[in-house]
Structures are given as C-alpha cells and as structure tokens.
Image 1 (tube, rainbow, N blue to C red):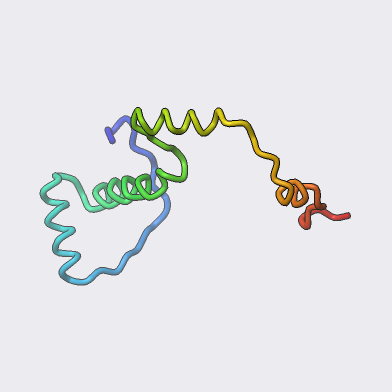
Image 2 (cartoon, rainbow, N blue to C red):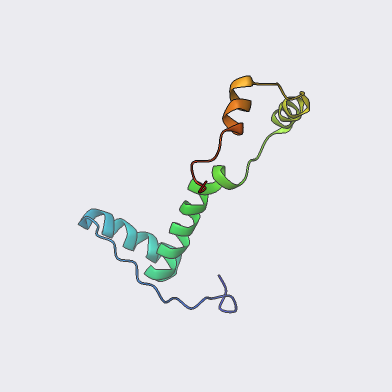
Length: 95
C-alpha cells in the first residue's frame, strides 16, 4: 500500500503469542522492511481473502469451465418434494 492509498486506522487489534511466535513475527517484519502494524494488517488481510475466496469467487480451469457449462445447460428437473417445500408458507413471515 502506497502512502497515497493509506487508510486511517481507527480500530485496535490485540493478539497474544508465544515468545517463539513473536520472535518469528519480528524477524519476518524486519525482513520485509515494514513496521509491525503494516506487516500484520497486510498478512491478515491476505489470509482473510484466501479463506473467503471460495465463498465469493470461483476459478475454474478450461476443463472445469466446460463441465460447469454442461451442467448448467441441462434442463431443470421437476422435484416433487422440493416443489412442495417451496409452496409451504415461510416460517419467517407473519401470517
């Protein structure tokens, strides 16, 4: 993140570590040439995006894309049980 794009940080994040973890983190911070806050925020953000990636975007190779398209071109099936379920009144609305 460049100085032009830095956002104002207004929320504190506290973490407890073992002495060994903290030493490792401090070495990585020094090796990256940044400060602890930038290092932690950058790497937590990257890790968070990685964890959430399969919940927000899907990437397929060429064969996976073709398989996905074949599945989506199939006609919908009439599932009586699903139809009955969808026709029931919602339990989340007031009658």
